[in-house]
Length: 213
Image 1 (spheres, rainbow, N blue to C red):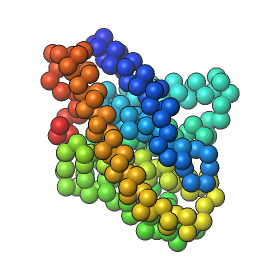
Image 2 (cartoon, rainbow, N blue to C red):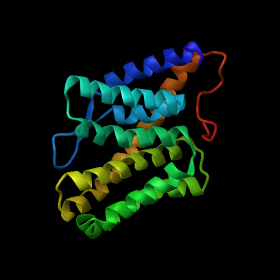
Image 3 (spheres, rainbow, N blue to C red):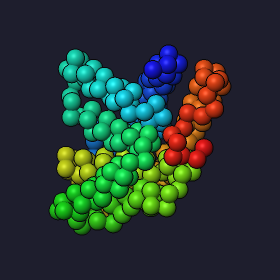
Image 4 (cartoon, rainbow, N blue to C red):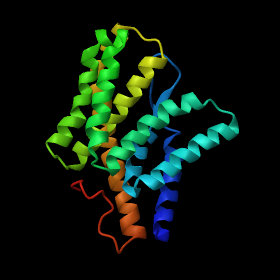
């Protein structure tokens, strides 16, 4: 692996640490929150899954060493890892299998069954993949809804919420995820500029081959 990849990864790691400090919104039903890192971490997929996996494993190990709750960290790391995975790969499982599995798990839950329309958002990644839309915003939108699907299912099975609360979140989710997708695009171009223009001038692009920059 070229040394510039390690430098790029270190820069992204620092950027994520900074992004963690900026809270965007709080999750309903708890003190958990979404930070600016939700827009940065998916872009780690540009470095490929080995680097991305190493980052998430290191975060979990860090929580174990510090004696921090593992479950609380997992509820954040798994959805964002899936977003990074989808940004790194056009594999059918992450774009078709994960959203469909999440829809099924949501609907079979007693509370989710009454708010089934909430899970229809997760058809968006399928539409993006099926239409073969490779535009960066479409890929970002699909990635953020994949993360949303995984995170929502984990939330559904771990945090008590009423059907009414889930339904009330539907319009909020639309605005939230469109904003996140735009943020991912911005972060992507920032990293593209830093890493290509400043560090890897011999490289013309660092975007995954299936994304249209």
